[in-house]
Length: 130
Ligand code: 5GP
Image 1 (spheres, rainbow, N blue to C red):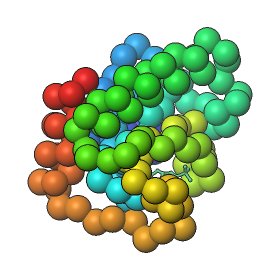
Image 2 (cartoon, rainbow, N blue to C red):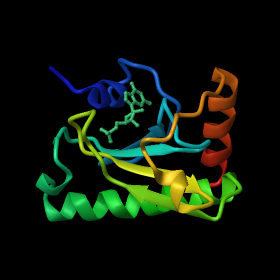
Image 3 (tube, rainbow, N blue to C red):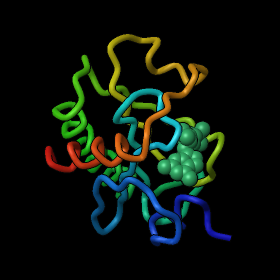
Image 4 (tube, helix red, strand yellow):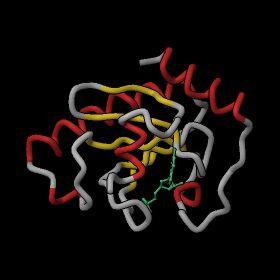
């Protein structure tokens, strides 16, 4: 059975899409730590990020850099924090999250709630900054 992220990539499950290329796909996290919290995933379905081959891992990080710089322009913040957790969804992914302090990247924090319209606007402004 395909992972939830593979189903998002395939368009079977909706998402607030940010960008894609031949190998990678980026979309807003549905339970964000902060507005603009984005997930970047390889299209290839591999659970553990360190099981990706070196070439794909490099491509994933370079793609994440482009997305992170767009988020930084779109969302007022001090930096874009980067995290790899992977305990919930068995499909490798990088979290990119606007932060203003260390505690903003604490995954034990309560998740932010936004309307569909806000998610759509957030994705649109990030896309516009790519
Ligand atoms: P992790 O596997 O890194 O612990 O967490 C997985 C992340 O994926 C969580 O931040 C969670 O909110 C996000 N997530 C889980 N299911 C979905 C989904 O169906 N759509 C989106 N956009 N994000 C999801």
